[in-house]
Length: 506
Image (tube, rainbow, N blue to C red; front, side, top):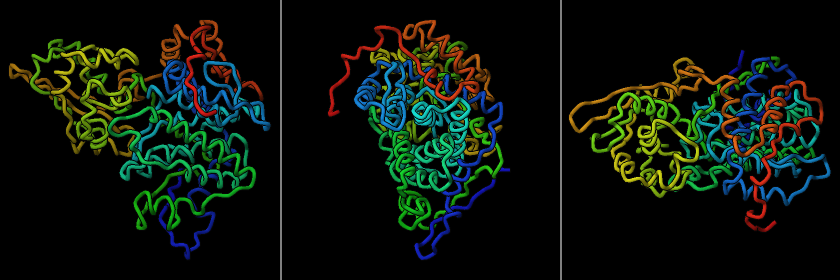
């Protein structure tokens, strides 16, 4: 059974023993050689396919073009053969592959998610762990074990420790989880992983202004930076370098000054020795390219579009009130008090964090597209802007309770909507989880992951390469040491214009 660990702040004179520190307990989990179960292995393969889908779809977007250009100036280091950059066959130093590939995976906000006390995209663990695996010539089974650890640590930190309440970006949980996953992959000892986890946390804490107001391209770079720092932390720790101790519980540490303060108290669940790492099974991916808390609302809007076609005309609508959880209301709803969420000239990064915009477009179109739904001409359409301005969100205590429920069967990320028409009629409906959620109307299975990959890779990757990649991913447990390069994908000739890369310092 999972064991719950009490975590609080300690004064220096209390001298908290190493084995009682959260970073050390994380390291023990990472170093545990427990086997990975078959269902977890299958889900790891699904998420590798999922990450590849969204990375390929991002190949020519500006943040990826810039990150890739940076990475290509840093060739493989002497400690291994390097790692490959998504879309091309070039090898670079693993921390830079983690950087470029991490940006590609996150750019469209279209991969997996886990929401609890904090929120996260656990698939962000895959680029740094895979980069290190390729660099050192690891096997498919090694990679699976490393990814299972990354998910386990991040999901359990997210269940226990809220960051956004203190305006700390959620990638503060990603640095430690990726470092732990790399430790598992490499078979590092507990002390080395302990130091690596501490360094990764220390270097990846930042404010969440990257997800507030005018959201910039850094939104995609933030998790990639955390992954890059995890790779570097592992390298330093392997060379005997140490981290601040205790990193979580110290009186001048992470919890005391960036989170709940000197009187903080958290309960963090972690597997016991010999217990399988299964947290990846609690996570869920996206059918639509938007913030996860918008997934269910897109599905509900699609349903209403078909049932009530008159709703797409703003002349027929008096108001649209979305009742949802506190978190959805204040992060991507009108409760954020961000005027940019109603601005038709706002960035794509801002619009994919605007429930009023997303619900409006899905209601009018009856569909959602990762490019077309964010196009400036789509956002600026007069009838869209008119309807958009009539959409607001409010917090509903019951949806807030369900959002935070520890019961997976009750946990919900949707809400109810009340649409008042100009003729006085009222349309109401509700949705608890997205259609693609494990408890949704059409849960994602391997078939849906493959279809998502084929859809997003179409026109960007040749058919033979699509089939080769999917076959390789399915055979992941059988891939021998040194064969993980086959998980890279090469774009079709002419898709990537290297001459268009921006110039920088490197």
